Image 1 (cartoon, rainbow, N blue to C red):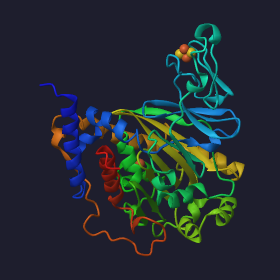
Image 2: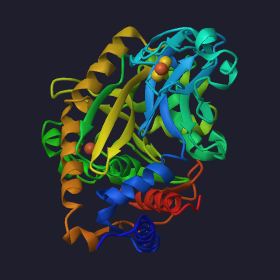
Image 3: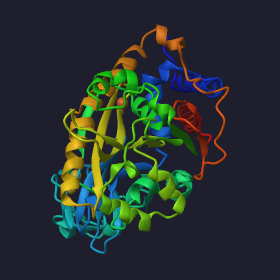
Image 4: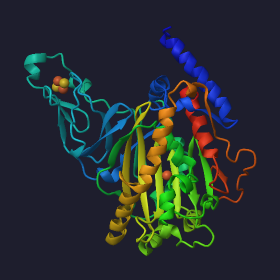
Length: 445
Ligand code: FES
Ligand SMILES: [Fe+2]
């Protein structure tokens, strides 16, 4: 029997309504991690409406600098125009639709389409059409045929986000309580962050929600997934190290966890950042509470709904090296129900000493870079789940998301916004992420 499109959507919406109810009971259908109909709908209802991270302002510091970025299937040029304003243009010529910008990054005052030569200023304005007068006479109104801009583009602390939905709320409202936690990472120095190098990119055979779920709340997989790294002393040996932390649902599906040194393993405060950065952060953080929280952290992981993750961790690149803090931003770009293009940036405080930038970069490459020991462990799990999630048995198979449900109590002393639990051995964030996803998928947001 062939289902009509409407019936297909009705069926999926039925499943989503059920999933939204069952998440309160800590149950999630595994099918959401590999289903073409769900994927088609989430491209429209999640990626067509949420704010998606595109890049950091430091990637395009000068007028004319641009990078090409994506929201699911949409190709976008993120460019700083001659006035310094950041614009996000749809990379699709208004004549026959060719991509007007073919390089991944560069500097250009104009983009000339390689098909027939329509030429646009980096503001998107159409300024040149070959044989325009002779071929079009007065018909072509150039002002009406510029490159289209993405309806909503906003930055927070150097991070550029865009939404394809003209009705989207402000980015400020969208990020909500998560801004407080992003400040811990992005406002650690007066000079701000800079991206070093181009983002690393690779494709993995896994659904995009699995890494988002992992980063939003799952620190406790370390003892099992990263066992070989634990045995090399690259990660804490204490199997319950995630107990010594905090698990925060920051609202709107965003969440993070922060972990301190386990007892008996005294790691330096402030992730072990060098003295110059520590001095800078005392002046730069927006509140004294930020300083107090940062003092006891050496591990921070989080996800901004839907697919932007942050990892700021003090870690050793190999068993001969001292633990070093490093910061990576991630985007899990969906390219299929079972395929994700990973975008991974390395960032560091602009005013950090050169020796530290180099050491931190090397730590990133060896641990969470494309071939990093931790990265490969994680990817294997996400691929495995995606593989089994598409079978017949998977159609009515549920996963357990109940960790901490009945007994976890909020920490009333926590100084930041959101719902904070006094340990990072929990799945409150994962439940909140899936609940938010269901709300987007059901057009309730
Ligand atoms: S498609 Fe761009 S000029 Fe024709
Ligand atoms: Fe991991």
